[in-house]
Image (cartoon, rainbow, N blue to C red; front, side):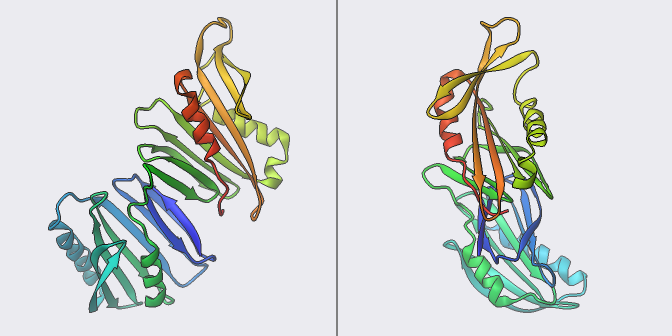
Length: 281
């Protein structure tokens, strides 16, 4: 099994499954995964402050499946990360397994569906038992998906992300928008081309530093650290950039983390960079 952790949702998937789509935020989002063929898993979440409304919303979701020609066969009570919920089995063109629960820790309603000719109740139960809908430990949470590996304070949120064949990127901001974190991953055969790697790095840096500035190298805790200075008026500083490069194996790829922070929060930026880690791609 491999671990995925994204938008404050953590789960484990079989090794041959891949995340095919994701979207939204920690409040309202979706994660879709599938094996090479025969099945699909969808996880939806949205804000739900009411303890009574979630079941009504789940019933509405099931009614939409019935309108598509599926028939309810059975309902079971389930528990997901200490939260009580329901599982429904429906039949139609293919088997459909659904589950829903409310996470009281994050005030989110979750609805999960697995369908396809190879949909398995045993596997569905296994995945449900691995889901953590409030994976925050000591105020920190992991972001782990397709080569991206970060451990950040829970207040950080996604600004942008790109997942393509041969390129992954995530851009996150601290809650007060003072610390910018961009991490990108390239296969080793691409990153080993210094020109291509340099072009990618420069393109990312342009999103972090103002125009007419230069990066002045300084030494800080054995990490690559740079002061951001005005190109002409050297006394003008715009904070600092901390950079960490991980050479990952199995699979072979290069993961680069760039953290921009005000000078007075440089230690926090160093901590963010140090906590970057290699993961599955």
